[in-house]
Figure (cartoon, rainbow, N blue to C red):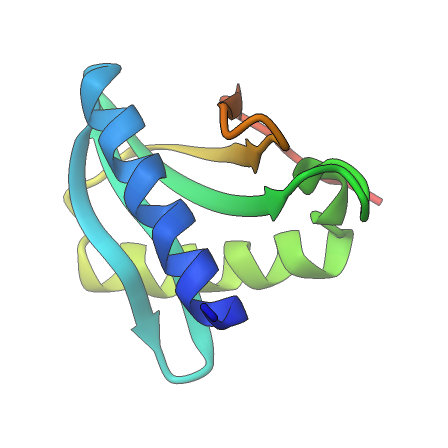
Length: 120
């Protein structure tokens, strides 16, 4: 039986494939610095995209995108800040969410939101 981490990695692989098919260039997968981590870093046009990926197996525990909290978003911002200090060539930034749900019939559902922001 696959672990929670294996399922998450599977979702991140699907997300990378979906983004590439949508015209994004994947720059980094699971980029980390200390305790800070970004699931996917991609580029498209003039934007650097910091992508949070959430994967669920059905909707028994709600929609995957519902698990993004203000605390998680602040953590993502901190990680992006470190990345940008290390790679200052990027001037335009977007935070994105890609939620992936494996439905009971085996179909995969993608929910993508570009340029998200939490300000609470």
